[in-house]
Length: 99
Image (cartoon, rainbow, N blue to C red):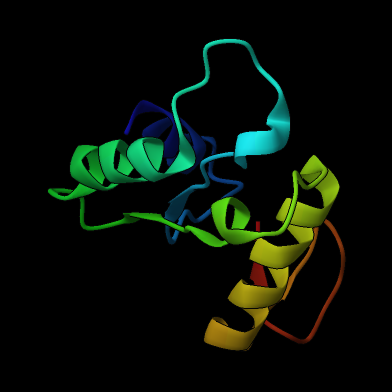
């Protein structure tokens, strides 16, 4: 909530949603609870939010994914859902831009 409020106050960004993406079990961190449980905990944590959602995609992959590939997944999903091109707000574009 604070991050969204801050970004709105800068006047440079319009936050249209938040995504929680629990990491795959093979990430390798010692003591990491299973993705099934982390996914459930995340879903419970955001159930009252009207703008944050949990995306299970990363948990369901065959192996751990790099941060870059996870961000590409979310970018492509947003592009399909909104029809917008995700880019830097300073980049001239005739297409709506999401910062």
